[in-house]
Image (cartoon, rainbow, N blue to C red; front, top):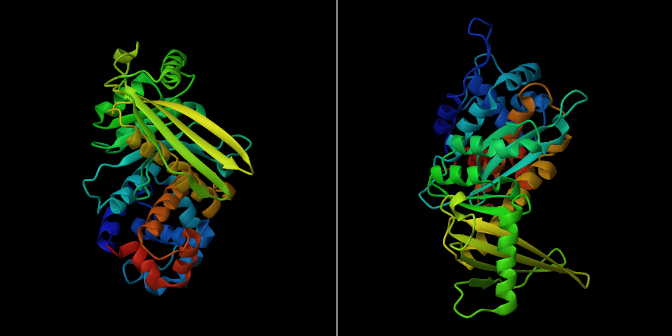
Length: 371
């Protein structure tokens, strides 16, 4: 991640403004200032203008700014019209510049931008492909609501490179077509199994009930149990069972299915215990310990991405609604989150890093440009 990589990446974004119009500000300058503003606690287009004015001398160190800092109306008009897919692709190219060859876990899930709705239009819903290991959103896709996630997931997978990775999806994505799409894209899948696939769910549930009840000798079942973990006043214990899926009646409908999994989490708090049991299917071999890691890791999309967007970046309180503006601000927040989390800076929370970046230009330099 360096300035030339960032400038080259955002230069690939198509400028939505008319070629014959009075374009006083370069698109790259507008996009980079917008990103920097969000990193430094900015929440709207007025904040972008104010950030630009406060840091103009610093910005001139790497941006052209031929006519100074754009005003808030210019930021608003541009972010209403820029293609969010193009913006996300460019920023992901910058963030992924230092990617190695290690196998990643790509968690696919959706989030509604609550503040983007109005009396005449539903709030925007965005599907994300999230890599928790390095806090990067590989791609985003807006849908017409949560009910359209099934059709959106294959489209999202076509936008990102998941070759060699493991893709995890919640139960809404447990569809034969989605399993096939993941395998066609060169990745393995771990799909949560619930009653949207009633026959398969019942078959897997009954099998593991039998295994736990009878403890049959010679049954090729892998078992794993994690140690008790204490956090926020509660104790959590996790365990998993995994078995080959060759006996599944519907195995020919699920491309390359190799294993089934039972995952159980017990939470104890205030003297009361609650146990949740979930089931999964996968194209991976039956390794209970590995599934324990992958399944727990899936929830990083909720804890490390969606929660951060809502609580730290105050996304649900944002009031940008028109055209592409809520989607583009969502893209900027995700890119800002990735940049903020990449540096090892002690015990500073993401919010405190944002505040430090707003005060200290050298710290912002490190976030943006330190390799």
